[in-house]
Length: 295
Image (cartoon, rainbow, N blue to C red):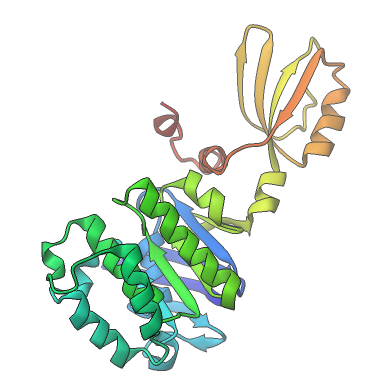
């Protein structure tokens, strides 16, 4: 299990993380989402042992991460900025990974050569950003990590390669129980692969649930009624087109339908929300300007 407990990080007197708590169950694929500047990358740098928290605890498998080589050898990390890979060739980096990670799988490295199709003798600095991402996944998946941490991992990749990479990741989750945390702005893609979601805002965790629970706790309703809505209905957003009201309501679908039945509606359709829609309305309830996101 990956866990941050009441973690605060201060840079020059400004809090980048403010009592942040996060919990990734073993074997889960956890999507970390949030507004720009929410602190997602800072949280990830704590999870990978790059940063030491100003306060709080960061543990993986119950053990502290910072300055813990044993735990770090079990973590695969692909940052958004791949400059950390340096200017070596894939062959040189593979030799380095083989020396650093006890579980480096040479047979898998050979097998994935046909998937990524990169020149192993070319320095990475000569590759495009997308090709550098190919190299990063090729090397990282070969260390057979127990924990895989990804920051905007498929940004710059074409749709075919994105699908191929997610297929390899899910294969490892199913095959040996790898735990994955991925931060991305591509919410539609996260919705397809994640089973848990954490939503950050202003250095704090806004909400953290399984994806199923998150989608069951908020619903979109298209309603036609001449009666007023129940006063205590938790309406996050409302719009009207002709006689049809479109409502975003916090609550379980069955209970919401039962409450709205009292308005004797001519039409009452309950629709599921996408992760992208949930993100917008949850942040709107936290004072974030969702109008910019809804244009």
